[in-house]
Length: 165
Image 1 (cartoon, helix red, strand yellow):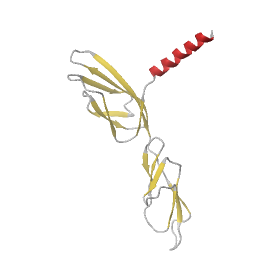
Image 2 (image 1 turned 30 degrees about the vertical axis):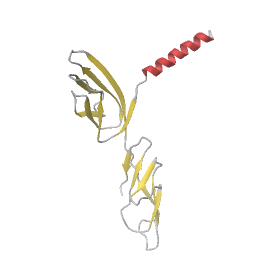
Image 3 (image 1 turned 60 degrees about the vertical axis):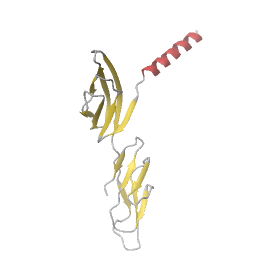
Image 4 (image 1 turned 135 degrees about the vertical axis):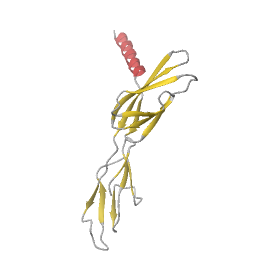
């Protein structure tokens, strides 16, 4: 009986693995190219299952398309290839769109100060990486002169955002 359970469990595990679909992870804004290997004489019909998240902006009918990434969310991108004989083949991929991070800067102390004084500026959250317009790679900086200060951050999804100055 234990052997039968093990075999059923292995079949179930293999079935799940074979049916799993790849997920492409991207950031909202801009566009992204998708493509399939071309076949001479084939026509490619692409479809985005949720057009509030993404829309095809060029290339439908060809092996490569460009998609505008409009909003965060998850959608399936489908392609049907129809060859010169009228035979069809299908493929799809799940695409997850992440929002851009929106870092804010906080001052620890007055932002108007006298010569020789300084103020500490701190980004509001922890990010995978960050760089200030001063070149500093830390989450906070001390400034001792008037100017425009901002930080560019990258979150754990690889999405990039810039703070207001």
